[in-house]
Length: 242
Image (cartoon, rainbow, N blue to C red):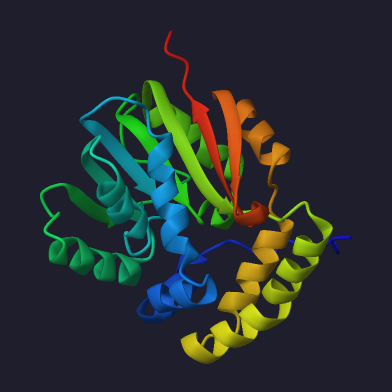
């Protein structure tokens, strides 16, 4: 049985990510046993089946999701990644330049709850391990819907909690005890990885998150659990008619 936890505050959480920016990618690889790379690459499978797509990645951090989308798919023409954490973006820009994708990927400061782009701009909006960090989830999902073109897709990659009782027990032990301790030692920020555990356990997942997508206006909503349900890709489409 999952112990109910109190929701941790999300306000100005980007300041925490700026503090741990230098160790963020290393910790992602270590603490996920490099599964985060595989999870991000899987997102490309759920892009619509047409070429020259224009992608927006929210809470882009150091740009990993966009980089792995370009690596895993030839359907993307150009992309923009936004985040409030400028230190994370600085690292991401160096990675984009190193992979010679500066003419394809632009990283810039931006808020997932108040997207500054016009209506009907993007073929797909992605957000990976970021939706649980926004203050107003419904507002953010509504903004994603607004900036998508008709028939555009939203792709949300997020942690979830396994339904299998044994896997759930192992997972929660790892998240509650080992992950905060290891993350604190490596990042030097004792709060950051305690926060990760608390947000994962208190954020709606599975059918509950699918209902949030439907409430924001998305159609054909479904979910794709991975690695025993440790993470889930959620897919929704914007209506193609007005």
